[in-house]
Image (tube, rainbow, N blue to C red; front, side, top):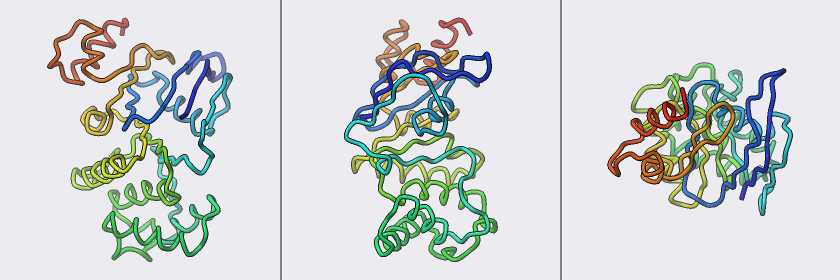
Length: 235
């Protein structure tokens, strides 16, 4: 479990996250939604310890190697090959070299990158770079995967490949915390939705649960729920 209690983060005088409390337990997927500036990326930065913050975050029955992170900005090294990128990230997590090579080969094969194994990352297509970016966050077999706009700017086929693979891993027990402006990605991967506005959690639950909370019909889709929630909150 990742347990946040009264977590706040400011940038100068601007409060980006305000007394945020939530328990990320063993649900299949958590979708973090909100308009630009709502605090989504700040929340992700706090959870991954890439940002300083005020408050408490507990990683219960987890250690730092149980968390995987796939950022919006490509974290791969352009002058390294696919295999060397993966082995580098494996070394950060202090993986056994033999195990790391086996896991890297498995990830490369699963994402269809076998023919580019020794290709420098800078020469890969956009979709291939995104796939590599994803599997660098999976090399150490994390229990939680934190994803921030992982499919941004890629072709529909690569996007579907990435989503299908994440969904496959969820079915094997991976817990995903996911931010995206593409609501269909959230619907596909996430059974819990957290709506943020001005750095605060304003609603959470399944799409159906949130629809009921805001007085919408049971068949209301996430896109309509998204608009209704934000309009209800004054945006």
